[in-house]
Image 1: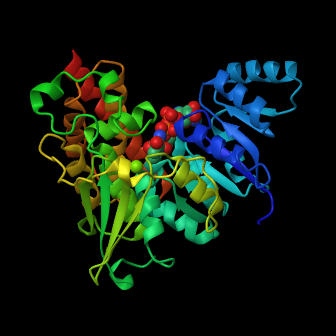
Image 2: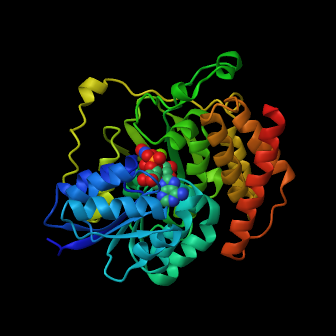
Image 3: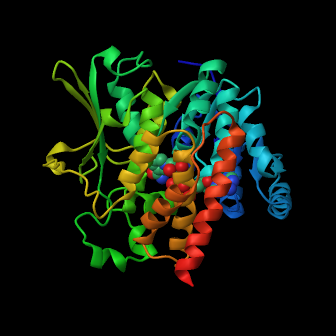
Length: 396
Ligand code: NAD
Ligand code: MG
């Protein structure tokens, strides 16, 4: 049994953050919470502080911070409250922290996740956007600091479990033919353009198998999530886009597979519950209870597979092309997508237009080399402005 470890949960009030705290609560002898961070959900953060008693809590605005300080003091808790964007980076890199769960959604999660990677932590990476935006810099930071990077995205976690322990340096070197990235197909699998044109945010956020935050739910519905995951897999496992085959598997029981040169295909199966990859990341290479019910194969009964529909769901192709183009293209794709998804959620943009906006921004923006974090952040800013312009034109 390993000794007590200190954990920072970035984005603790979200879907992944909450599941992480559920797993941690099952193992009080192994894990203590050092810091919990959130954007604005101060009520949820307060409840989490009362339950998990972190040393530090972080919120973005000074006003929310003041409120939380007052509530914590009234409850007799001495949790220290920090505010501001940089406080997330500070608690991700604090010297006493062993494990950082990077579960902020979107580009906002990049700097804190990078801070954890640069300071040599065990980084449990849920925030796929960080790798999509700055894969080369992120992997370099992990290498240089000796951080341990464990993928939490269920597909990448599955691949990690099916790969040889030492898998860096190119798939072919390790006898690997292909990575089979599974996709549920989302709530609109099989739908045609007429039906897709009228999709509402509520429909897009009702995923058939997984319960997730709103942004990733929309990404799953457009298949952009699979595109972002393809890019994520390229960076994590030194793969090319051609070495990754997306397989639609509507039951979400196989979480991904690795095909070897000798014809073997290894798969990881389980109920669609993020507590499994989270527990794996927390305890690796040990296995601990995740609170997940065992998989009942007789109840599952059948597993189906089909090809993705890239004609009606162009985002997967756009992401693959952005990875092939390289440089800042994936950061541009990601930024345009975040702005378009936000506009869709606020009911200002049609579902089908999300892909159109991303395509237009990729066409228009200048793709540069990623030589520093600044170039990535500049590309992100510029792509957001372009996307906003296209959306304003469309919605006028
Ligand atoms: P969510 O929307 O439920 O939660 C997001 C969290 O990030 C919240 O705690 C929120 O307060 C915080 N946050 C949002 N904006 C912020 C900002 N500007 N600054 C600081 N904190 C901010 O999202 P989620 O579904 O938990 O997803 C989190 C990440 O994990 C995403 O990158 C997603 O792609 C990835 N992921 C999620 C799942 C899942 O099942 N939910 C699965 C795989 C990967
Ligand atoms: Mg996933």
